[in-house]
Image 1 (tube, rainbow, N blue to C red):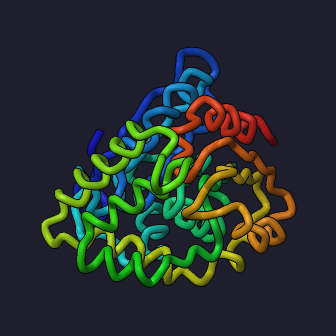
Image 2 (cartoon, one colour):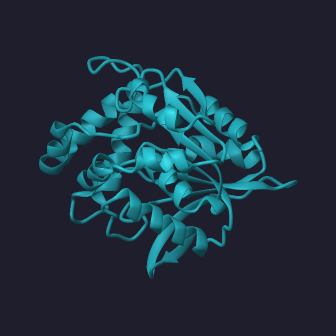
Length: 265
């Protein structure tokens, strides 16, 4: 489906809830240099459980008009406008990686609009290696190849699922290619690296929260969430046998974790 935010076209992949008693809608946010396709392995399970599911392409990503937002607070403000455009008064928010920072910020910014928050493959703060930041600017394809490898369980020399690594690389390349300026990856990684408000925003949250983390995550390792977990004493924790790309590596287990969160009052 398409809608307009600030007179710019936005693409939102939507699955209606299965017939029966409808439950709160779920809005799912992708990570850096990705789009709604990252969430496709999980969306069906939520819809079958009675949740209407919306996965937007963020500004400048794939079928959503640009320019991309340069920071997490700007993305959160944009998302609030998108909820208005979709006539969603209240929903659950799930975000992966960069998307988790946006979900966290918006939940603190407009808590009356957000019922539950799932932070998937997250870390707060979310620093990005200076080497990767520079490579994203000077040689984005090399940076995407590195990210595709590091995002999956296994070693750099031998990823556990080579086909999943290739699929991740194909997705990032297709998203990057649709932004004419060619700096989408660098913009997204810069937004993650610069975001400094996460712990303060986390302390404001009172709704149910779930952290869903990969035990073998090399991009946002579990040890990097210690301060975030202290800031969110109400948060549940799901540790999956996966790397950073949890939606692709463990979609069923991730869906179960999300549905468990959505069942909490």
